[in-house]
Every structure is written in C-alpha cells, then in structure tokens.
Image (tube, rainbow, N blue to C red):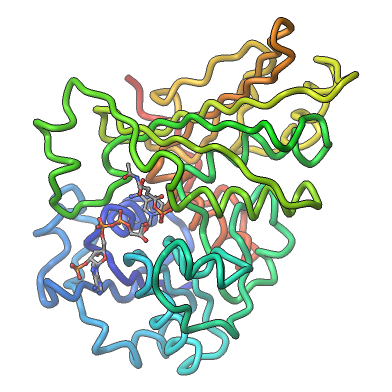
Length: 346
Ligand SMILES: NC(=O)C1=CN([C@@H]2O[C@H](COP(=O)(O)OP(=O)(O)OC[C@H]3O[C@@H](n4cnc5c(N)ncnc54)[C@H](OP(=O)(O)O)[C@@H]3O)[C@@H](O)[C@H]2O)C=CC1
Ligand SMILES: CC(=O)N[C@@H](CCC(=O)OP(=O)(O)O)C(=O)O
C-alpha cells in the first residue's frame, strides 16, 4: 500500500510517520512541505532518523504523487486540504483521501463556512466522518474520510452511548475539555510559547470553539434531532493528551445499570476504547503515544447527572492514529496494524 503525506512537517504529519514506521503493510512514498522542499525529513525530525531516508517534495508534484499513491493523508491547516483532495481525486479517481483537518468533516457545508470562514470548494465530494468506532461500515466503503478533531474524538466517544440511547436530556450537555499544547500545531505563536503555557492553565474560545458545531452535528445525528452543547476547551502545560469531562442531566427513570449497559454494548468489543467502568478515572498519561481512548462514567445521584470522562492522546487517537485506523479499515486489513503499541509510561 503506497502512502503519501501532505503536510509531513507538522505535528500530525510527523506522528503519522512515527506510527507508519512500524506498519507492516504501508510504504511511505512521498512526503510534502511547501516551506522546506528538498530537505530530508530526518533533518527536521531527528527522532525519525533510520526510519525515513526520504526528502520532502512540494505540492508542485501533486500529479505524480496522486498517480503513484493508493492513499494520501493530508495534515494541512483547514481550507487547504479540499483543494488537494479535489485535484488528487481528479488525477486518480481510485485514490483514498484521509484528511486530518476539518475540510471534509461536515455534512452541512454552510456550517463549515460559517465557522471556518472559508468557502467550501469541494462540495461534490462524497465523504465519511472518520470516527472509526461509530462509522466503521461507512469508512470501509469511503473514498474520502474527514478525520475527526482531537477534542471531538474524546468528547463524542464519551457522549455517544448516552445520546444514542436517549438516556440524557439533550439540552443539558456540557463538555469541559483540556488539551496539551501540541493540539495547537508546531507553528510558533504566543499562545503556545513556553513562558505563557508552563505552570498555567487557561480556558479559551469559550462559547465559540470551532469543534462545537462538529460535536453538535455528530451527536445530533446519533440522537436523531438537533442539539446544542456548551464546550469549553482549556490549554494545559503538557505536550500531549486530552481529558474531556462531559456532563448531562439524566432523563427520568434512567438507572446506573442502564448507563453501564449503554457503554458496554457500544464499546465492549472495541479494542481501542478501554472502558474503566462506572467510577473509573481516565488519566491522559495512561494513553500517551497510543491509540487508546480510556473512558469512565459516574452517576451523581444528588444532581441526577451523568459525568462521562475520556482520555486520549491528541496526536494519536485524536489525529494520526485514528487516521491510520481508518486506512486499515478502508483497505480491509487488521484495524490494529501499526497501532498496537502499549502507551508510553510514565
Ligand atoms: N495537532 C493536533 O493535535 C491535531 C491537528 N489536527 C489537524 O491536522 C492538521 C495539521 O495539524 P498540525 O500538524 O498540528 O499543524 P502544524 O501547524 O504542526 O503543521 C501544519 C502543516 O501544514 C503545512 N502548511 C501550513 N500552511 C500551509 C499552506 N498555506 N499551504 C500548504 N501547506 C501548509 C506545514 O508545512 P510547511 O510549512 O512545511 O509547508 C505543516 O506541514 C490541521 O488541520 C489540524 O487542525 C487534527 C487533530 C489534532
Ligand atoms: C490546544 C489547541 O489549540 N487545540 C486546537 C485543536 C486542534 C485540532 O484538533 O484541530 P482541528 O480543528 O483540526 O480538529 C484548537 O483548539 O484549535
């Protein structure tokens, strides 16, 4: 299976390369950068030395790249991936595209345009939302996958069984999530400057984070009706990891056993979702550098709320790992291929 990575110099692209280095079937063909074409990837990321002799190429070579690849992963800022997807599928109609950004995530293009402030230029694309555990059969048939965002992966996995089984009041969902700094990408900006982030925690984009409509669209689809949520992201001083704490009011008559049953029937056979059960406390460090999502839930009898907590590595299950999981499904190989490593601890 020949793979190319567009945007290989970013954190998501580099994480794809790290994981694909131990993938038994994948052969990385082309890797791109617009700022550093001609540079060896190991000169930019020395941790990849010995694994990749390749030098970076540019999107100027898209024709060759698309013609010679079975799958392209795109790790570009939103607004850029859809142009690559549109051109690559025109060159090679059988190619598979897995975009790690937001361009192919939305069914409703108007919502994408409203939140991302760019016109959608590949509206005719037939896409599948790549939250593997929820959409596996569609992913298997997909040509283009919109890989979910990191906050959205953690939050939707935590809430899906509650929403799908109509166990909670859909008007009461609150998501309080924390992310490590690599979630902001490798680009230099004040917000992720060491002195600004270290020994500090802050909320940001309160009431207006762009993952809000993504979570609403997917959970609304599971619920069979539109819903709105409160989603508050926080930046925490660690490189990787997301912890998402999700609250919702229980519907009258819902018992703790019904909640347990919803989680076990949804995820009991899912390798990458590790259920810690009722009273379980997910810890980001227990998922670090792995494709696992750890998930626990609590029933607060006093307030009649369920509190679901999930932990993932934003660069793995929240980005590159889930992208590879989707590729494995699309190519009908064992879903765990290249992803079955134990988390790095401590
Ligand atoms: N970091 C994370 O945890 C997650 C990221 N994502 C998404 O994945 C995508 C990549 O994120 P991440 O790797 O963190 O970002 P980075 O900022 O680390 O990397 C961005 C990449 O895009 C390239 N790039 C930047 N601007 C342009 C441009 N105008 N045209 C072409 N290429 C460009 C850069 O390469 P160069 O400058 O060398 O050309 C680089 O390879 C984004 O859409 C992000 O939202 C999704 C889930 C989680
Ligand atoms: C810590 C941090 O800044 N995180 C990013 C989310 C990264 C991500 O998942 O980006 P997508 O939009 O591609 O999903 C943010 O809040 O914008």
